[in-house]
Length: 216
Image (cartoon, rainbow, N blue to C red; front, side, top):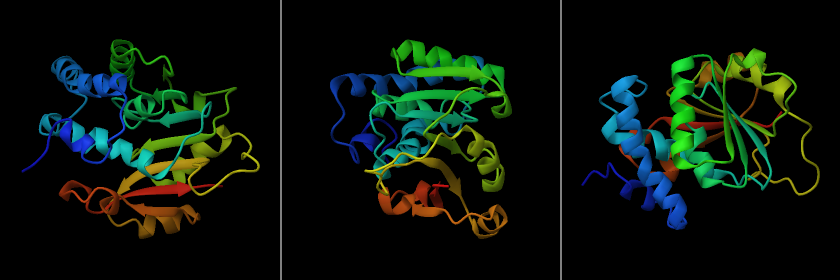
């Protein structure tokens, strides 16, 4: 049986607080309502929102532990992925979501307000115009080639944290990618850590889907 609702989340995450459960459950009606006004999620995917968008975003949370007070930039957030699900999951981490398309940021702001996400801000901007801020982590979801993502992310990253950093601390660039990435990784000149999402969530839609982590 295919799970297209909140059950696909609770299949892999069993420790949501009541508030997080309420916020996650509100995502589908909110995105359905906004999708009728502004088509931000493909119509064939809207009914699979929790698997293809929310759970995909939370694959980052299945691998990395964001520390309290960390500053995270979601570069090219689109309709709010992975930033909004991660902001729900990590309420004590600060998320800043940026996109160059105004109507998408309008949806992000509206969904964030409806959910009461006090740890999330949004900005209609090109990433090159995000100035005077430093972040611990830049996250992104299939926005551009890895080489470009790293070029944009690197100037926005603060100094690496000192002692106590482990492979579970996601300083640097964390991006969600799919398909054969060999050439893209080679072109980037980086050697990212690669996590196969299908090993985390063995669902058909996550075959050939990966998390790439460039620490520096």
